[in-house]
Image (cartoon, rainbow, N blue to C red):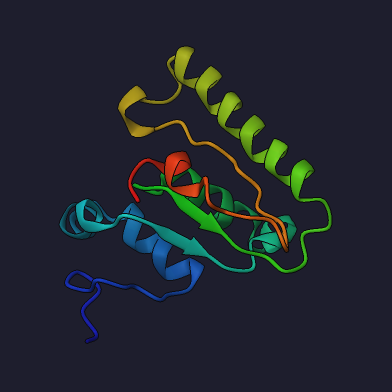
Length: 127
């Protein structure tokens, strides 16, 4: 199947997902069905070329995100950074810079190699 609006599983690259999320007509048709987004290579958020796109997608995603990376050197620090990004957005929302209904809080729960992810379903609430 090649129709992103009808798919149950969407495998895509950052730039295409950005276009899909930022296009109101596309977003209305498929985002209500999306229950999880899986981002691989999330460590590349630090790259100058892709960093802004990563940040936009993390904030625009309509559902919980699973962020994968085999090479994040300090997952706890990375998780703290993600949580601080949400606090910054919440602050901008209070100051009227961002619409309140455009954002949902997200929880960061690092799961390292060899650690159980049994608590994941309670973390995201939609599993």
